[in-house]
Length: 141
Image 1 (cartoon, rainbow, N blue to C red):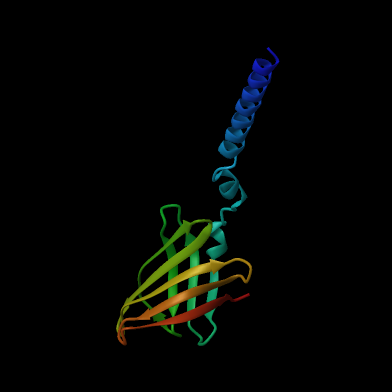
Image 2 (cartoon, rainbow, N blue to C red):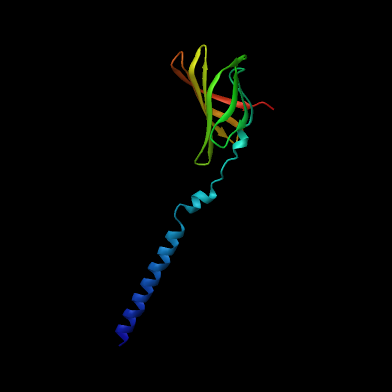
């Protein structure tokens, strides 16, 4: 009888341990990652942004809920913005500004907002040259 009692107690302990482990792993899946991630405030994109290597300016006046931006571009004169969009991806704000003007046939800025530095940083595709450059924009205060 003692041998059977020991087997039952051991089996019950193993079952309890398995149940506890299942509960712990089920509660520890991706939820902690997503709950720790902050969703960036899209309105942080609004402002005048000056390119650090030149006097070029992206002026964002409005960030729309449909993913579009109201943006202007100056070099130093106004250059037509064909379209401008924003999106939130994995907690990060990203923008795309496509220029459509003389000497700007689809030149495109693809930038990410870096909140720790309060800058826009990323790539500028210069369509005439067919070259891509890393650029940064700082907020004009």
